Image (cartoon, rainbow, N blue to C red; front, top):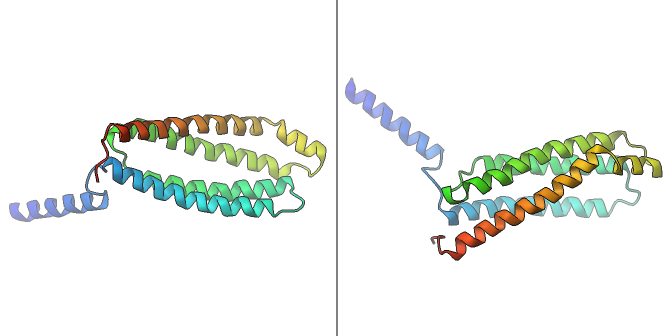
Length: 166
């Protein structure tokens, strides 16, 4: 009976480790996984941007549609990065980046909702541009740029110290 329990515990621990990736990623593995996620999202974003540029008479509802499609991309990024356990050296900055990312999804949703009801007039665009939702969006974009700069700086400094392993 004791052997059966021990075997069951061993199988359970093996499955948990296998399902969770077996431990902490190296910085190289972490960077590769983050880069893979970022590259997929960038390709999707480029397609979305090209579609927006091809729109002849861009309306607030077109903006809404783009924001909703961007939200889908961001949720895919969130889901993918939720599965990545960062190494201790970058855990705090990982959390900063992807906590910002999660907050940005809500900000985009609010702006999309506002754009959905904005009339396609000069006054409608002005009201949308001056709205609290757009102000929050612009502020979050500026914050996001700073977060990304800090994240890249931390990775670059870590790499410069020769911490990355092949």
